[in-house]
Length: 127
Image 1 (cartoon, rainbow, N blue to C red):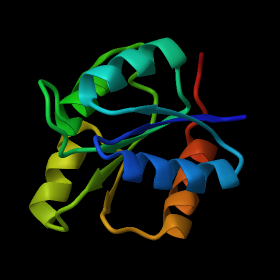
Image 2 (spheres, helix red, strand yellow; image 1 turned 180 degrees about the vertical axis):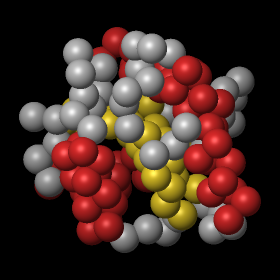
Image 3 (spheres, rainbow, N blue to C red; image 1 turned 30 degrees about the vertical axis):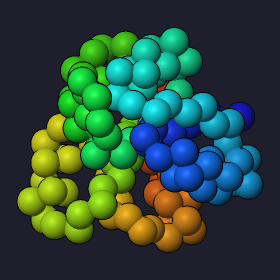
């Protein structure tokens, strides 16, 4: 079973995304901020990460994405970034940080599942 790390400071979002992915037969792990996300990504070695960019704390989602993509141990893991702002500049910042895909909130759970399946099919996680 493929493992997905869901990172968001809002419990409701983690639960919603997690429930959507569990129904699609994925194993879910969660983190509430960027620092915990980096730690869990290194420990748990997820197949994919779904990361909110606007999180409080020392490391937001964009910075966590940059750190994970710059680390050889985690750089091959696809990252889907969630943002509350549907601006092309915001999306460009996400891609510049290393995101493989961006979704603006609110988003379609079906489209999220389709993108997860596409990324996992085209980029299998190497261990």
